[in-house]
Length: 130
Image 1: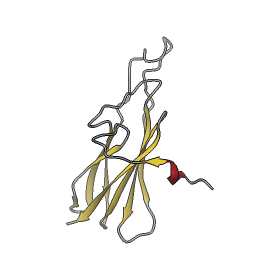
Image 2: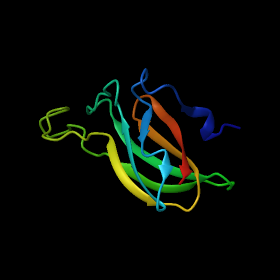
Image 3: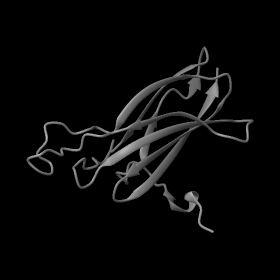
């Protein structure tokens, strides 16, 4: 039986343009954490009608918990499409999002991004408590 996990890819974001990059403090202070997730930080990802990042989801897995919790899902809908044709539109989404969360536990942030051609890509980052 196939599972979603079999199709999620990961790599070093400095060498692979599809990997989501998680940027935040290494330590949570006052329970608050600001997190930025982007795709194409080191190597630009094309964001065209034909080839684009459709969405990014961010999850948090507390260190002592079995389950992950969805922080948010962020969709990117403008890929240059227009009546005039592909890539003729006035706006192109930039696959980058900044969000805030509060947590009382150390854990792992997990980001998953979806490329309409190359599928699912993930990365993770550990965060500690102050």
